[in-house]
Length: 349
Image 1 (tube, rainbow, N blue to C red):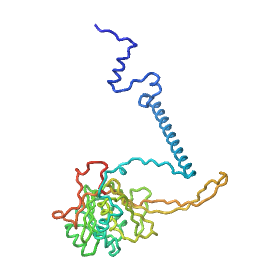
Image 2 (cartoon, rainbow, N blue to C red):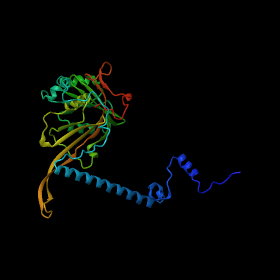
Image 3 (cartoon, rainbow, N blue to C red):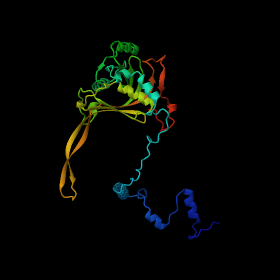
Image 4 (cartoon, helix red, strand yellow):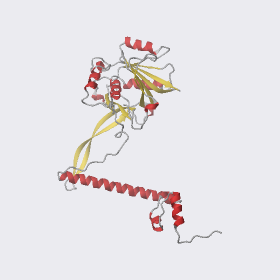
């Protein structure tokens, strides 16, 4: 025969809550804690969620104002302002790397003085680039190559035909080209770049992705023929420094600032983002309130504006090889392998 448990006995309720892994709340506590997921009505649930989101935003703004007021008060009293909190990101918590470049590394400067890019970067040789494709061209390949020609000054395009790459390298050496770029395609889409330094290498193989041509960029600008300025970001290791100097050797070392063109190679988590912009400085009147807050004082404020010219794409280094292109007897400086990706916080560039 079974028996009924008394209403006042709460052991069964406690056991049930422990089994389910949920804390047992009293009736008053349950009324105070209201989660949007508990509300079945869709409209009411949306209103509660919006209200909670607004409250969090107001609380965050109060904290920011209090922090700014404390910093201002400390500066007025001549004290040190409170230390700013730096959020933790994957970039600033990366794994320690022995190959990170340091300003007092004499060995690094010796390698830089003796590398293959030195004649171009010291302006002893004018960079001259030859661009070609793989044997099977794609639909967007010609448009991408024409935009590459508009980005890289003093660059020429030659059709690949049926020639082997080694013969093209020899031809480029005879014509005094300093670099050779091969655009590889797969399924009618550019998917890789092979950049060969001439005459002695090195050879870099990049995976190409997220290609957006100029015509597909909203409110794009048309580039001029001025030599662009070059911006290289976050190439911090020795390998990254070598790759950055490789990109630098493609462009003339005397930019024409009147053209206001900027070419950017931004490295983030070993992905190299390419962007091409034009910039302009607008001078506008900035009205700032006076001491009493009644009379407005007009001041000039310089505001920069950017206009993207395209193309836009992302590169990922696959291999870096000594010398010119050689698949059989080539010696590789660096090869990316899947087993090297042991952590999200491990970077090589």
